[in-house]
Length: 209
Image 1 (cartoon, rainbow, N blue to C red):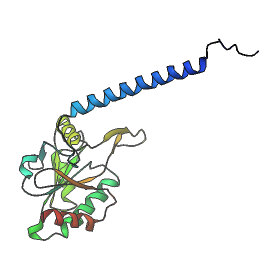
Image 2: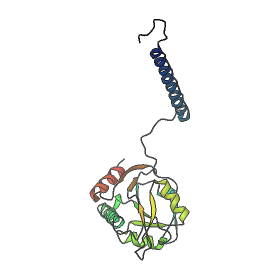
Image 3: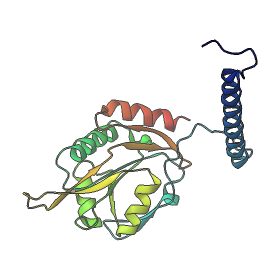
Image 4: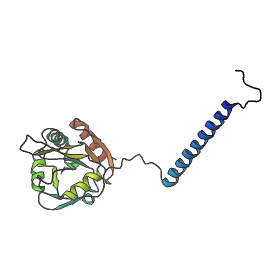
């Protein structure tokens, strides 16, 4: 049946409602964006990753090693555990080779932090690290100390049960070697597959800054 000339036209009404709804959504999004910007204040991005921070761990000889003691020269740091079957020994061997290529005046600290304080004492961690290179310092501590350090370096770790193994469990974890600057800030990281020469070159470049 033909529409009466006096009948209301509903399509334009629906379009106006949709437009009003879209406008309301945009207003809400704009308000949310304004709130985020207000929360940021005058902060501007620095381009530096939020990796690193305060820690207090224990070396094999019982002394406490803190982040403050490392200020003044770059350092390398890696988190793992002594029962690790492949990634940790491979990575530490690479770090050892990188340190071996450095000359006397280029020597820097390299730290291995255990993620398994229930099985790895500071002495165990120290002996394990030194087996790859005497310049790698193994560190342990309490569960809380380890968790604090891992959190500061954005390290992921999770205990994984091993029902058919005498070990009882293993630890799934991220495996990056971090290069930290002399001021304690993050410079770059290397995967467990990185070449020793890549780490050596980066350390030398950092020492020349």
